[in-house]
Length: 153
Image (cartoon, rainbow, N blue to C red):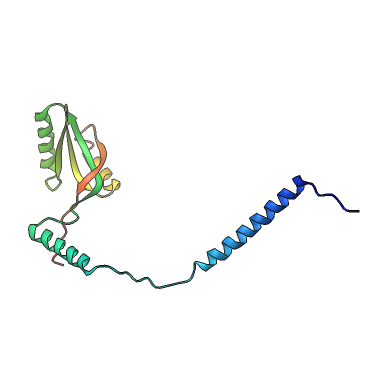
């Protein structure tokens, strides 16, 4: 005697076969993508000319092509008095003459920041050195000026 197959039993079996078929096809396609090939870049020769011209113009004017990037600075003063901001900047400059300082005015406060650090670790090192002199210190992430590189090498 034959067993009767009901619709609710047939649908899961069909779904399982469909999933198996899709996975089988997907795995064969994945192996087909591993073939190594050669890439040929086709571009207009004027692109190289423009890049060379830009480099030539920037080096002639003394402007670095990549003069800024994102990094970190240490904020060591924030207050509404302009004179206090300039005094804090002068005090830091006397202790660290090689360090660049920046005064930023966001109404109504003056903020004085120091350094152009690429990593947060460098900024934390300066922050530890300044902790005795300045009570409130913060590390700020912003666009920094990159150090000048020596092109004579």
